Structure formats: C-alpha cells, structure tokens
Image (cartoon, rainbow, N blue to C red; front, side, top):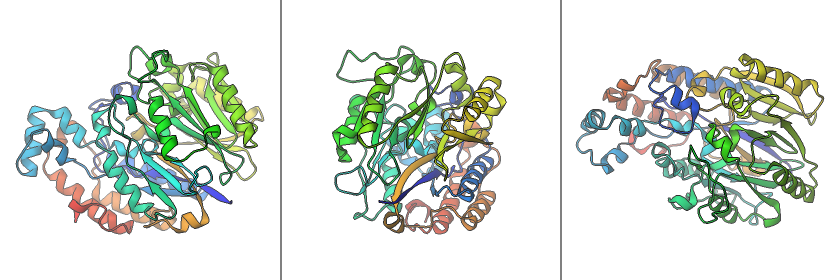
Length: 447
C-alpha cells in the first residue's frame, strides 16, 4: 500500500531553558544554567520544518506540553496558590522547579515508539508513549504526551495510542530514539530494529559503568508485543556500553537509518558483526538488501560524534532513491566530521546530499535534528484521519512564527523560572496555540 513518512517535529515550548537535568547527555550538562533564547529556539525549529516541507518531505508539528507542571510540585509538598508554589520551590528546591518547567518534550524522538499499519497485525498505526523513567524531568511527560497524541491521532479505526509502559527499572523506555525501521518502501512490511542498553533480568548483558543505560530489552519487547509486530521482523540489538559511558545516551546519537540504509559508527553496538548479520538477515526476508554505511573510529571518534551530533541527523529519501542527510551546522564546523560528510557524498553510496541547519538552541540542550522529530508512516487514508491543523504549510509556518514572536521571551535564565508572571505568559500562549492548531481543549488550564 502506498504510504509516506511524515516527520512530526516538536514545537519548542516557551519555557525552553538550560537546566542541565540530563546526566549522561554531554551537551545538556555542559550548558547547565546558561541563558537560553526560547524565541530563537522555536523559530529555528519552525524554519527547519518549512525548509524540509518545501523540499517535498511531508512535515507535521506536535504541540509543546503545558509547563510548568505545578501538579508535580504539589505532589511533592509545595502547596498554596500557583505563585506561592513556584516561590517556595525556587527557594527550597530549585532543581525541582527546573524539572517542572522543563521543555524537554521538544525532543519528540522520545515521545513514543511508532509502528506503521504495514507492520501491525490489526492494520492500525500504533503509538506507545515512552515512560522516560530514567529522568524526573522527562518521566512526568508521558501522560500529557499520550493526551497530545490522542488529540491528533484520535481516530481509533486508524490509530492505536497505548498508555506508557509501567514505571520501574525493568521497563525503562526512551521511545523512537532507540528504534529504526527498514523496508523497501514506507508502505511495505518492514523490519523494526530496537536498540537497548541493558536488561533487568539477564545478568549476561553487560551494563555501562559511568552512565546508566536508559532503555531495557524488556521494554523493547513489550512495545513490540503491544504493537502486534511479527516476531520474525523484529531485531533486538544491544548498544555498546562504552559508547553510553562516552555520552551516547540514545542510539540516535550514534546511528540513523531509513528504508534500506543504516549510517552507524563502528562502536555503536556491543557486537557489531552479530548485530549487522541479524539485521541484514531479517531485512532480506522482506526483500530489503541492507546498505550499511559504516564510519570507522579511524575516521572519527565517538567523542567527535557526541560533540557534533553527526548521527543525530535526519536520513531522508529523495525521489531518485538516494538519501538526503540533514545535519546540525556544528557538523560543518567540526573539521573531521565535515571531512567525513564530504567523503560520504563523494563515495557514490546511498547518501547523495548533506544539508545543514542552525539549531544551536536545541543543540546546546543536547539534541539535534533527529531528536526534534517523530517519524510516522501514513497512508493517504490515515493522513486524512488526522485531527487538527498540524501539517506544515507556508501559512501554518507564518501563523506559528508570528505566535512565537508575540509570546516567547528572548532570554530565559535559571532565576527567571521563579518569576510568577511566566506562568500567565505561558498559559496565554498555549490558549492561543490550541486555536491555531485547531485542537480545542488540548490545554485545559490555558482556557
């Protein structure tokens, strides 16, 4: 069945800030408590969406979650009116206030794992919101994420939006950041690759020593069961523990795939040869001749990959069957990485073109182009079943950009989170956003 892959980018929220809450994420920790620019962050993301849409890449937008999460702070013992809750949290537990204000839902690669209807036994598109159990500022997201996904993908005949997996060490789930799909065409049955960092129950699975692995194999298997995937078309591969310790907190920081192509670093997986053999064998069963593009450590180190976010790029199919690689501008400013990009294009392999974008606001918080998008394969009937005004056009880009310029601050420092006026500013912005996106009731508190 004919289908297209839609990249649904997260719209950066008005509380975008650099709290440095994500240990294991080198960029996030390096820029802790730096001054952010929420307005610029949102506009950079919107400009990337429009540029790709103009190139014929189907592009959607997912709304930010409502912040601050005052319900979280009240659950943790901060009572009173909204301003009093914020003031006390700022005074006594500023890190908790930062978590409540986190705009990390902009990383929609972590929003959910998505399986297209071509892969599922009931013929629906399945979504499982990630529980993001490993970090407080992200673990609070999944209920609101499910609500947002159900607002857009609410047609139960076409879509199934599950609840997140149970919280707990056995089922740490980080969503599509550890998931890749391979197929001859987006609408054809495919192979789904799940990459995990550890096992709760299998002591033979080596764990990293410095940073905790966030994705468990048990969670990956549970998602595959929920989605009704065919066992022979699912591959589970362990991430290299040493790479996790070097700052590769998700697989999409060291590998990216699309259709028949996998771009990866030789240190991405715990057992590279076995992983590639299993993946190639499963792909062959659905008619895919896997085209692996391997970056050797002699070409660039894992540290180079983490510093530049080369692999946290979008690998997009062009009309001629070759690939466009969308990278952050930092890749072109890194001598070794830029040389690798030129070599990839000159080699005549599957990657024909590289396009860079200035996404510095998001890069400084620990995510590049791939982090910002959730890939959703849709048939024409499924696309027609979407709710709201969420597919990117020049008109939607204009309306959202105007909204951002009117409502977002151009400076947000750690101490600004204690400003009670910020609560009202954000609620007013979200009340208008749900009208622009034609998703009434998305933000109950915003009116």
